[in-house]
Image (cartoon, rainbow, N blue to C red):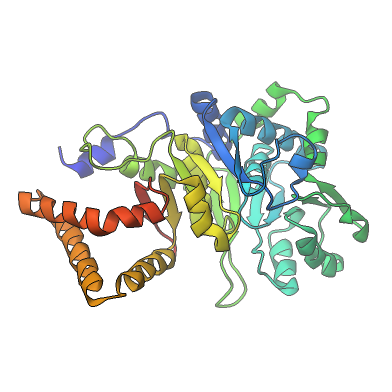
Length: 388
């Protein structure tokens, strides 16, 4: 059987025709005590941490949440959003940079039956107005007081009922709409919380239901809202699992995507690629560690020492160009780098690498690639490339 046939026929407990919330809670059943999320201390004044719901991480260090702990947060946030008046099929926007709470709010809103829409943090006031009005958002999850001020500037032009801040704040008095912090939503959901009721919300959903509206960048006119059903997300996830999962036909030296690995997350979750990577990681039992920002990726990758990361091609171009520039400090080191790259490409293209090809790669690894791995945390098995 060819690898393509093996890929097409492969199935396991991760692959399925379910909604995103059902996928997540099924993963919690499988990986409950495994680490789900890692978050860095000293970066944000997190509302959930201030409310003693999530333990504080030491400044500059990472703390962890298990799948069970993240699930508990998601379920109570889902109940809290229902208390705010969120009904099935309501549109609720998320206006924040990539962080732990983005993902928690995302799955919580879908658990409550809402359709999650996206607002880019670099959006102008006019773009914020458009990205709230076009989908008909009834509420918005906002990262900070700074971004809340963008909503305040267009408050009379949008028809939203509430805003939820991910960071601790008392800035709600500036707006006429109801403003909550995320810990307040959690507390609302915890009052009279009923696990069976939340489970019933998930059971009532269908994988053909609309899950999210992801907006294009707007570089060619007004941003276009792309309708993505649970089936769209899950079909993508299923195929990635078939390609990268632990298929029995794979040789031992071929890396796979499996439970227990750690992934560094820094892609914008307002983009489809970042969201798909998140859902894939949750479904596969992978730990998601969140970079403090795009500017701290080099530092955070050393701290987290991830096994896998996903990025757009431009990120890999920058990594490669940086390595090549550093290697080019002398004619000899530049030549060693070029020969090492040639050896790796030759090995990669060979269907059955020869002894000489394996020997060349071994030397290249000792001279160049081992140092690159160390600079990337020392554990990288997989770099996934996608997006534009």
